[in-house]
Length: 631
Image (tube, one colour):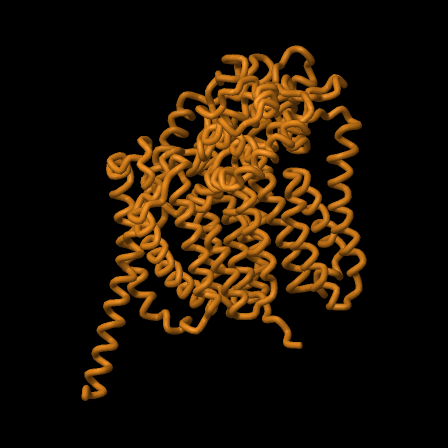
């Protein structure tokens, strides 16, 4: 018989071998380009080796070391089904994103490919379980004595650290949508003198205004109003600069308020300090704060609204007793919906939960809180669906809200053209102006096909029926199209070389290829944003530098939405395991991540920015949430 010492040594050896095997699987998962498995020409392995294998190898090495260290401590979470389930869900998301992030959407799963996919799944599961152990330890130590809360001090630090980026991007990052918003606004002031692409193809009622709801109307009015005031004062660029300066101050205040709230709730000084410097120094946040993007305004309003919800949960007595705080909360709800109408859907479950928790405090002022929140929701709906139409605000192109439907239609036509009925072909042709949409299909981008239907002004009922009929016949095709659109939002590979998927820094050219050919983005005398040659060189230099940084393990992962979304899954598991209140926060934003499938481009950083701004705050918030009361 073997001695106890020999048995213990043998078990230790088995554990060591298991750790090494698990780490090898985890590293191999990161090195395997699953999107190349179907053998598609544009995802050939040789191109992967040339472009990505060096950086992915560095990431794999880093993860190998991390997983090796952490799996030794995984015994602490051995009995947690939540940790295992979270790791499996994250592994599934990573495998699906790897398969659909750039591949030909139709491929056969032979036994060899299934083995590779299964091995990658196992490797990701090992890695994510190890990371869940790390999160468990960090969140467990996040609560503790903090420094004296001071939102103003935090806001000032965040704002000052962003000033160098303002110098680089002066007068602010301006993208194609912002140019079109300015053209809408100035075209309303000077009818017939300024052309707007979306106004030209929208179905506005001919009231004399060019403003339509393709972009958030409030954002168009604010950006256009600041530009017009600056232009009247001698420089439209100064008007844009004033807009982004105020926006950046409000963004810094939102971050400062969030950090102060977390410290007041019991976040340790070390954790709060790390979060502060992350918001202040990581380039993603200051650069987007200085952007004229609607996504930035929405993200800032959303963070303010989440802080209000958190206060209702954590400090109901204090919050309910202060009418000014309640009014600011209602205003944050209103602005969140006005800057993005789906913001109401994001806030609804969070605010219902927060109000339910606040009601249990039985403190005076709950009626005012409920009234402020309801007023925010109702006022937003009234403005969007009553005031705007009465004011002559037009309806934008109907295709803008149907990006996923466009992708699913194009993939169905590409793979099953023989199954498309004559009436469906006629509907497709009436909407897109052609039947040849299959060759324009890209798994991650609906724009090229979507632009064909910008000028369609007929009823969408026929298209909806055709789309639904094809989907009922081939639901698997529609599912794969949806996975293609979602894939890059959940991807954690370091293969992004497009600045739009890393950090969108605007369009400074004078011309753009539009639906009807080339047209001037700037309108001399009416819409002119001056960017000097030196400024353009600085912007291009910053783009190149950030692209280089975005390829560095593990820092580069922070430029992508995938780690933020996957962390929400781990966070949900941690809260369930530790019986913490507020699990509705991460669950709601997981659903938000899934809803990004409806956007026109997969993995576009500006679409995901609201998530990337709010997830660090929500992670720390969940760490200081109280435990559920036992009944």
